[in-house]
Image: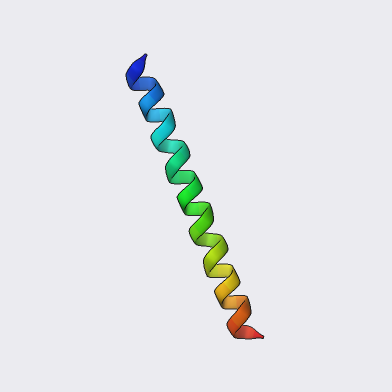
Length: 34
């Protein structure tokens, strides 16, 4: 069960990082477009 919790935490962290990176890239691209 501990392993399952660790896997869930890792997946959540990865998803959050990916979302943040995508948002930053979109903001930068939109900023440069304007």
